[in-house]
Every structure is written in C-alpha cells, then in structure tokens.
Length: 260
Image (cartoon, rainbow, N blue to C red; front, top):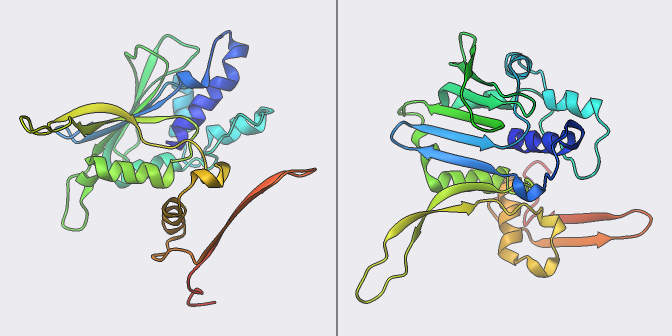
C-alpha cells in the first residue's frame, strides 16, 4: 500500500513537468482485488509506473529504494509524502506468496513490462500488455499448512483489518469490492451483493477534530498501534498554533509496563 501511495505521489509531482496536465488527487486510487478460486491477491495503483530499467533497479536489487533516491533528488513540497525509503518492504510479499508478478507501465512509455519471481531463484522481466500507466502486484498465495492459514489473506474481514491497522492514513482511497446486503422485508430476505467501498479513512486521527472522534475510536487506535489489551486510562489530544504549530495525541496506559 505504501509503495502504491509513493507511486501516485511521484506522478503527482512529476506529471506537470512531463506535460501531463489536469492531475487531481481525486483521480488517484489504490485497488485491492481478490480471486479466491485462483488464490491471488492483487494490489493496483494508477501512479507513475516503472520502465524495464526501473524494474531492474527497484525490484531486482534488495535494499535499493527508488523512493529514497527520488526524495533525495527532488525538492518536495508539503503535499508530497514519500513513505517507503528502505528498499525491503516489497519483499515481505514472499512471506505469504510463493510467486509474485508485477505488471507495470511507466507514465513516459507505451510499452508495459512484467516482473516475475518465486523469491529464491532470481526473476524474469518481459514485455506485456497493460492498457494504462501504473502498477499491479499479484500475489499467488502459498498453500495452507498446519502452522499457517494463508487463505485468510483472501478474506474480506482480514483485509479490512490489515488496511485499517497499517494503511488507514494513506492519503489516497484504498478500494475493494465488498459484500453488502439488500434490505430485508417481510416478503423477501436480505440478499448479498458486491459493491466497491473505500476501506481507509485517509485522515490521521490526530488531524481530526476532537468533537469528531468517539472514545471507542481513540481506544481502538491505541490498542492496535501500541499492542495493549486494555484501553488507556487517559487521552490527551490538543493542537497548538503560533510561531510553531503542532498537534499532540498522548495516551496514558491503564497499567505501567512490567519492566518500568
């Protein structure tokens, strides 16, 4: 998700100087696609995309961060927020997938390329068809074992939780087809159907007004992010404006840590 966000930010920054006009943040999105039959999880963006050489440099070399290089070379404004800067996040895909495919087309080129790897014996890059710029990462999930249930990453509930926990504050909408139900009546029962939904809030909790945040939301954020099974005993949330502006969101745990 962070890589998708970075790819969109890069296009938003470079688009005007490359002759791409009319770019609006509302045009960008990250999409999750689930295929339970073929056991694939696909994550897509409509960002900057990659050329063949960029695939070689960004995915073919571990700990080589294209985002870090981009950040160091550009004078980025406040509306550009590059996240991935270590060059290893992508490889976490192989913790759950035995094969990863990356279909990508650079915003500067008509030809798209596909990067394929099983994680242990290098990778292959070849031309492919892709109608629009951006990148699709396809994870072919491993088979379930007694120790690990990889199928859970195809479940709507699990994906929702992961997005909420780790990617809720990405500034672009993360969309997925989810199961909804029609309204039941005395004559007809509720029936399921699929509809696209945005899974993330896109606004950090500390940037929201206190009046908009429930006690349950504060507590859930604290427990998920700090690994505490209990709600905090006190929450302090304030904003200071002056020569220096800052926001603070402080939590006081119910109990002191065992090694305190």
